[in-house]
Amino acid sequence: SVFATIGTAASSGGGPNQSSSSAEVRTATVTINLKPRAERSLSQQAFEAEASPKLNDIPGARIQFGADGFSGAKVSITLVGDDGAALEKASDALIDEVKSVPGLINPTSTAATTKPELIVRPDSAKAAELGVTPTEIAATVKIATIGDTDTNLAKFNLGDRQVSIVVTLPDGVIDDPAKLAVLPLTGSKGTVPLGAVADIGFNAGPNSITRVE
Image (tube, rainbow, N blue to C red; front, top):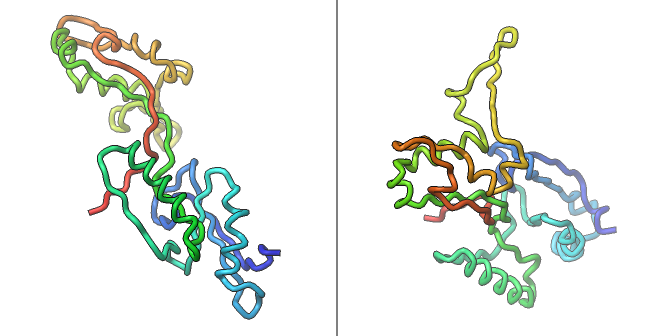
């Protein structure tokens, strides 16, 4: 069995090779160490070749092979551009092409998987006409969806500690642009619904952004 070659395994929160980062409920890292060479019949290269197809069947998993503390990538190609959709398409095409190169195992993209994002685009002309500032729009949406900053939150005294009270809209409202559109904003000419000064919708965005100097 291929997996009889494995010695120990450990897991932690956070992304790959980021043990110092804060743990996230959406991601985890599993590190698997091979047994000493004298205790296994397969070389590391043979293990990679046999294990890759099985591990790649795990939905959403990013598999890397290498020595301790390294990503395992012997060849790294960086694609740069201003069009995210075009970059993703080029990355997929490049991966398909290098799969046919002898000796290359498990080519992958480091591009982050996408997640749904709430997009609120203010209409500058309408907002100015009704006396609503971009800051007012941003603050209202932030408080309604994820809550206010900790320093502004009301506190509940619980014994010898204080617990922050976070009030947000229910999921059924946050997920509905039509319901978000009626959020009241304070303008110089009175109360204005969010939908009157901004376009609201959902789109896919990256889980994380890595900057390359």
